[in-house]
Length: 278
Image (cartoon, rainbow, N blue to C red; front, side):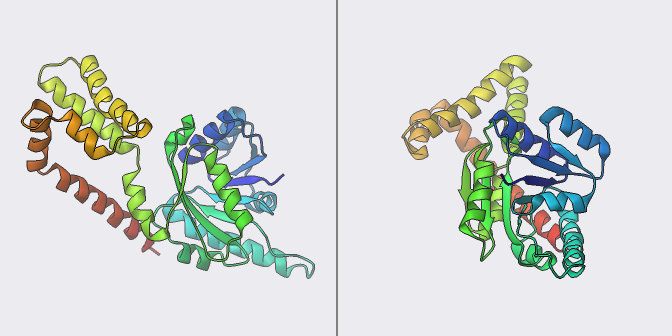
């Protein structure tokens, strides 16, 4: 049974572990982090094996999955550190075989080409962008693969994230745009903005949140679970010249679509700035 090894015990690792264990995933999991407090907490909550020693953690990943779950500005340095460990262990014994693990980066904005340079073949890379909503089993994960990665390795990567929600295989060229679009913060932010506006027009806080949550969550759920295209639902909900149509038209003429696009482009620029820091 192959082991999944997480490098980094932060928020996304915690969310993934919660979702995996909640889904009944009992495959061995090892977590490496230099913070012993984080490791003890993850072991207590999710029954993972804690491993503060990076070299020992890598040994568990042989023939398994090595998941880079550290900050983007630390990802390449960690990959280079691992490349050094692999090189030393291989050189120290003529009988040593190169590691056969698959590496999967969760770092936004770091392309496969840079990952491959930092930690080259025979290690094969994938990228995944899982949502923190994976904690509840409602996550959405985009994945993309390096050239030459085997079918079995692809299935291993996809199978792990499929435990916590749907998985989309997309070209790496779409990864940055996906990352800034799929974030749950859009929903939280829209809920907060709509509820605050409703309060200013006369609703109390609890009623404003209830109404805004229905407008966003229940309407979108109806679209996801139904068979009508979005355009038809918009027409159905917003009669020309009616109240809902007036609200949407006013928001559009005040620049709401342009502001959303500007936000997404700013997020993409921030990711690409991170990848150029080295």
